[in-house]
Length: 262
Image (cartoon, rainbow, N blue to C red; front, side):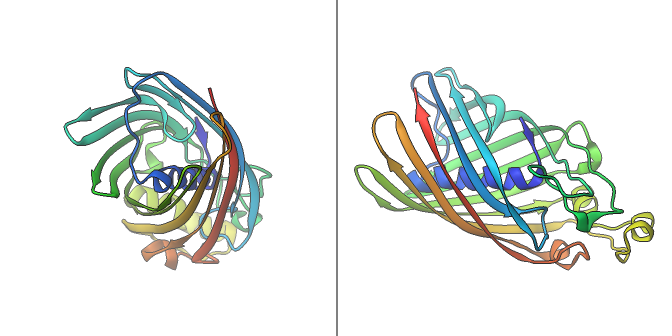
C-alpha cells in the first residue's frame, strides 16, 4: 500500500470517520468480509503547505475471520484480541514527497531545492481499547526501508455523537509525535538544502508534529451501499509549526466517498 503523506492524511481521516462513526476501534471480524469504495479528499499539497488540492481516495478492506487483513488504511497484516485490547500489526509503504507539484502525489513547487523524499516499507503497530463509549488507540509507524524517514507515534480517541438506524455521527481526534529522523526529514532544512532552496537552515527536533480532529457522518443506503463524509482540521505543532517550510499551520480537511460491502 503506497501512501504519500497527504494521501496518508486522507486515509487517516477515513479512519477517523470509520472509528468515530461507531465509537470503537477495529474489531476482529466474526466472518470473512470485503468492502471496496472510492472517495475524494481535499488536503494540503504537503504538511505545512498553504495550497490544497483534491485527490482520489481508493478504499479496500479485506478482512478474514482468522484475523488477517488487506487494507488501504492499515496495510497488510494481522489483528487479534488480547483480553479487552485489540492488537494489530501490518506492513505498508509510504512516506514519499516530491520537490515539485504532483497531480495526485505529495509535492509542491514551493519545495524546489529541497530534494525528493523516497517512500519505503513501514511497520504499523496499533493497540486499541474501548473505555465505555470512548475508543482509545495507540499506534506507531516505523520506517523499515528508508530508515532516514524516521518513525511516528499516534494517540487517538473517538466518540459517537449520534447513532440511528441508517446514520451514525461521531467525533475523532488524534495527535502525532515524530522522532528526530522523521522531523528532520519532513520539516528540517539542511545547509545544502538551504543553499538550493533559499529557505533558512533549520534543525527540527523530536516532538508532537500534528493534532487533528474530524466530525464524521456515515449513512447506510442499503445492506451493501454506504456513504462516508468527514470534515476536520489538522494543525502543525512544535518544531513542525516553526519550520520555514510551514506556510500554514492549520489546514481544513474534507473527505467524502462511498463504499460497497460484499
